[in-house]
Image (cartoon, rainbow, N blue to C red; front, side, top):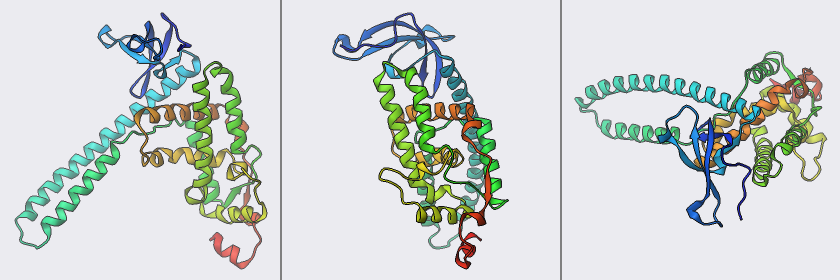
Length: 314
């Protein structure tokens, strides 16, 4: 028989699209009146009219903890920022569209062969672009101090020709393990929440290992990466997440919205992933002094000064 960690009259947070709202559970019942079916909850959103009261499944509810309230506030800010950015982008697109319409009117008056086919292709490209932008987005909360650390890291590597000393004192695997250890007591009694957490952690570590050499390394770091691969043969089950640390991890997080937009995730999966990654981002922000090191070393100290190595660093 399905059970729940939520009860009637409990004050909770409830997802409505991408935002968490304050709500209260007015009633609890089994879906379709069948006790074998999952429970669903009648929620009233604080400050909303009763006409917005809605029956929702448990996966849309969150406990009204300070941590979840902080997440809700950050998700709201991210959505508002994205909305303003999209409005500005759409305004620019409309201006360009108007300008193109004028140009197309002029072109239709000409008898240049192939003009019509060229325009048709452009319309197809626009349709593809619009389809891409309508996919579910992963707007991960990125606190300001993490954004600043990304910029500082970029300047040290690209402008000062320095790299983080590796292996990291706190590796990415250790960072995720620490987060899991802190999250586990909060999710006690909810096996689904823990399964989601473990799946997200495993997925992010696998994603990092695959993306590191492809898009996460700057030019000056590649000799270091090649040298580490040559000198250290990883044990079975180990990889870059056992060598690199927080500095490289947040590079992945900054690129995830674009990377994940290219996947075929459904809206529910997208929403849950965004929530978990945003929670981790906020947690990492609070513990930034523990996981981000300031020790950078000159590129030359990471590999032998052979002509070939020196050439590859340029």
